[in-house]
Image (cartoon, rainbow, N blue to C red; front, side):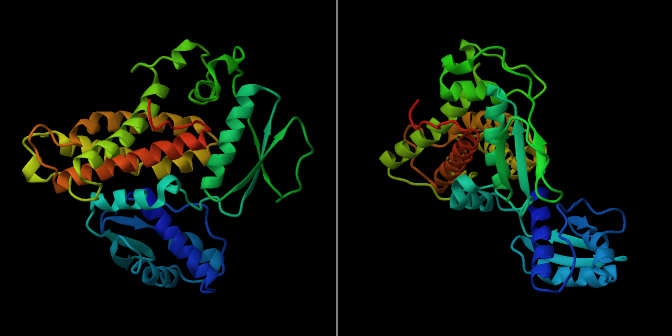
Length: 345
């Protein structure tokens, strides 16, 4: 379990306690978890009980004890201990890489979705300019992944009533020319990849079918995950999350564990990337993250299928599952940017 996932687990425990009437307090937008300080214990610690005790009108330690019972029942948490005035010290269950793969394959394109902004309404205001409109469209989709409702409004409108909506003014550096000649997918990528304060480049480099084009790498990486699934089926095996380090196939693919670890790290960062893209109103964060996932997949994909006389093993099935999980993240991310993910490229 990553720190982001653990933070969300703690936040869900608080929300359940409020929903069940055990606490009367506004649920915080986020919860910080960190490594225990000297004198602490477990893998991570959080001061959320101290944070909400005052507004809840309860002693911090009482709030911590209440939350600890809920957290102890949460998947991925092996133990909870309350220390000091009300710190929650959390011990994680053994980290099994297959757990992440199973979660991604089960959730598909919704992997990484959360409720950090649940119940909040955003009004995204944009000028009549192509880049602003494209950024706003993607931002609306990304905000929805975190539980928010968002609407895009063009031009100047009266300020909403207090508490009605959060106003987000999208004013990126305009495109230097009309990107329509690039086609829908390449033009959206050209406008979304740079940060809002950077001027986008509108040129044929976004159409080049070569390694130097980030959009090509992302879409090619997704197409490779689909090809791996088809090729594996032709060889008589399918994906099954598990240990990629199976000793039987280690001699043929000695670098598989390291390359799998790099891909696993990139995939585990996806939920936090979506949260940051939503809260910072920055779709470019997602675009750049997809490049990281794609590059990790392209470095890993040569380890997935058996070589020569090698027979398909449990490790090959686990590697295929990891590759398919990467494909789900790539396809889901591209969809949020309004870009197609082709199965053949």
